[in-house]
Length: 158
Image 1 (cartoon, rainbow, N blue to C red):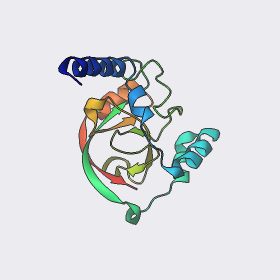
Image 2: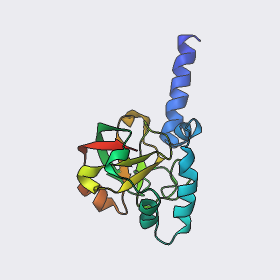
Image 3: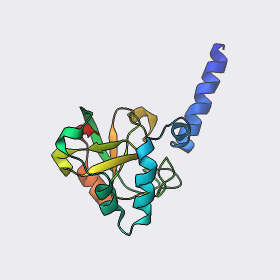
Image 4: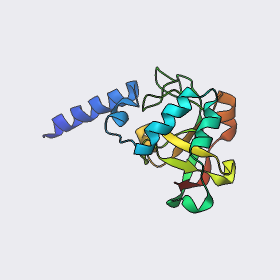
């Protein structure tokens, strides 16, 4: 591939990410097998926030590993997402307990004990590729997301 072709391919890829940042990421993503059953049950319940945490109870000894990452928050507004702000990158509807993380498979369960105690989050969304080392927690409203800000926190990957 010559330099011109490489530049053209890069521009096309960049353009597709700017138009729909989730499209190129969702295509090559894999899903944790335990995720399908838990997300289906969560979507059928009246309160997804309660269902997700009841479906994936976690204790301190079950973390596979911990990592220190920058964590931010987002809400379902078109300027923070794409043209379908209430649909995650893996096709589910947003609800409490959703987290976006490009560095983890869809369905991976994580905890952030410094901020949320034993609450378990499920990876169901993606961020812009330039934030491939961060995590982004979905929040119900824009003000809560803004108040959360940017923090370096320890994440337990379950």
